[in-house]
Length: 603
Ligand code: ARG
Image (cartoon, rainbow, N blue to C red; front, side):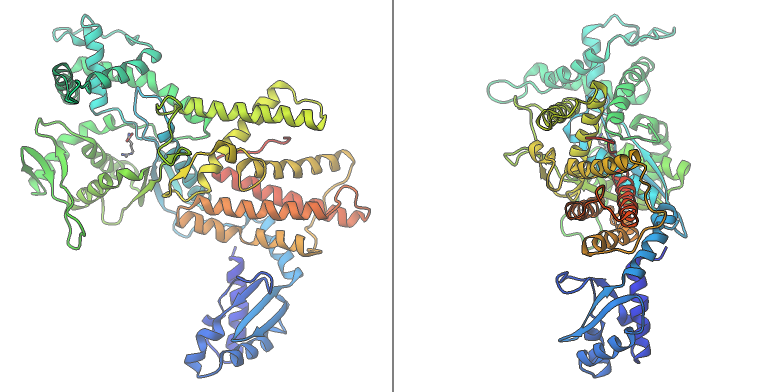
């Protein structure tokens, strides 16, 4: 469906033309003085020079032409040459009716749907998900859903961190503890045990232990001899694993296999779902040939013992370090696997575009990877490579969010805390209002949904690149620009519709004409849907969906507070109200789905 503003612009443009001016001047936007009018057109000012006329004369001429159109209920030319426009109730209602009847509320499938890969997980095997993984997951999931809704083919890939030094550290620590295992016996050529030699809980302890052993310092603040030795062994074990040592590969597979179900479960709780569960290790076999090709073409050269690609480009403001493909010991690193992953994606998925979402502190890494991949002809010219760097989640002190004891908070606990808080709030509310308590299961489920909304909306309503303060009190508030506020608004609508149904009152089959300003505001909100989706998609901006929802919720509540819906005696009016709020609910539902959460029926 054509966007509402484009339709208004078309009508206004035709009036410009009739009055003897260029139709392109008729561009209409939302009014920036809502106290004066709903929409406005500034084309007369833009055209004044070209036509050698006073803007107000042009505006008056156009206003004269527009008087005949039934699109606007009022058209006013005001000094110095603005056109102040109010849309007619009939035109508005017809647009929204068509929109409600259309698939996806009028969002048309694109002429050229694109294949987009979104790489937005990045959890590291054997390390529990922590607060740092939250933003890429939440933002990526929403960008994925929005792009899909806009009609593109979108593939989400988790891109597990399962290949670098952390794996070498884990192998080193397991070897330290159980050197007798067959994985470490070079002469072993039988089948390795099916059961891994550790539980998930053990694994989660092994990595931090190994990591701190490799970093242990003495009083002077220098690495201890043991730490140096441990680190060297871990490095060597990483290399051996990457080279394909049979026992290490078998061990790696067990580490990955035991971690994935747990990761999946954690992402499921966040309503985050990946189409591909590929990891860095999956592209390992592509690396040798890829490196040979880079060398043969002269793009990769030896520098200080390492194999590197010079990625400097003319016009760079600062000197960028080369992209290291193989370290001096011959091992691949984080850049190498990311470049090989581009190779794999080009071959297997032929994407038009690849989007990466991680912490913005990884920007240099992606600049190196993108440039090296292009220079070496691995990423096609036509394949877009885009990095979206998210800001950090800070605590009240403005520093990256920490637990009370200074650790990095585990995602699981963070979510559980918010759920508990929401659960208590539900029970308190029931008591305060003297309502019959929800059955335990339902109360828990409602708490879960509300907590997720609080968490995700708290994140997504900020621009991805900005840091924000993790303020649980504010995120979980039922008033203000929060997830729970939206859900309360929706639950309010559900409750009215439910009560109407119980009383045998059906919503009108067709949306009525808006009867007053509050209703009109809701219709106007709805007209912005198609444009909002287009912008949220092209700008990768879930916060635009948030702003749309918040405006709609506010207008819904204004309408609710000034309207007696269930007590309305005029049955036709009442049925119209019900149709209107049902439409609002449907649209809000669709939008929160794009943000990655859902609404309970009751709250
Ligand atoms: N595992 C990485 C980390 O924890 C993030 C991976 C992001 N995605 C990528 N393709 N590099 O830092």
